[in-house]
Length: 339
Image (cartoon, rainbow, N blue to C red; front, side, top):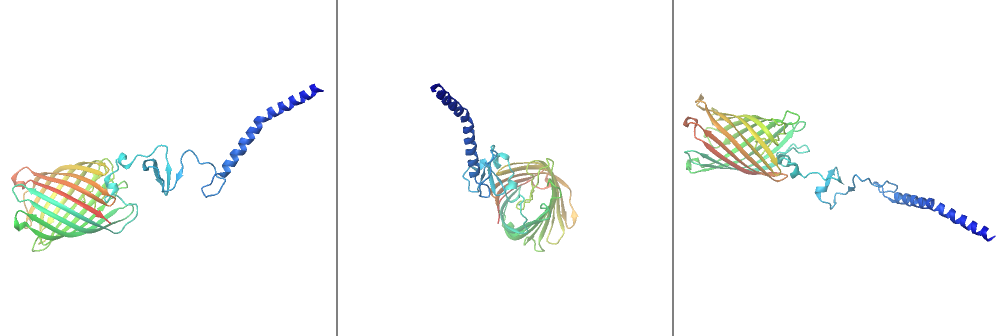
């Protein structure tokens, strides 16, 4: 009888031991179901799945460093490999400020521009010009096909020669056309009138040309300098500058063919270009001799903020003979604000 009882107890213990793994598995399964059902869903309810390991959604007030967050609409996501910063990507200064393309359509936006220009003609007095201006700019057409601006203000000129000290009034009308899909071609024109410099009427000038990026880099319209530089790479430019005196007589024509190179390291953008200048001057409608100079441009831009920038530009025009007129070195600097 004692042996039978001992056998029953051994059998019961064996059954309990065999049943233990199944009980543990059942308990773990119930615990997993309870945890899953307790997880909140994106709509704030329950029954949602656990978040994946690919990313966690955060609100816009996340304290995580910006280098670890990229924005998708209004949601920020933690990426396993943070994206490069704009500085590391070498984003063009033109894309960050006035010369960049805004994402929303704008048909009228005001800007202020302050330029300082100094000319050093060999054998002649130096000429200093201060050009503050107020303007309005906008664009129309798909993908900012046409950009335009109107600006005006006083033109204050000071020189070592008292007869050259004047205060005139200047009005500029500027427009650009970007006909290509990737904007690697830019056609531009700037019409300028100056009142007060000629007693017979306002002086007029027209600067028109075309810029082509051989590197197929995007060219951004520049309403401040109207230089229109590509983001980076080699480019070519052809332009003509024509002038009329107060009597509406044709006074001069300067045609330039330049090759250049541009590069961007945010917040800086650099460009250098050079080429021949074909100069034709007129007197009472009669053309003078055609002369050829060497012209160049060194341009540096610095981005202050999303709506402001500084620039510095050096323009030498080197004459190879006295009949071509004096060699002239011109330095321009300025600051622009858009609001």
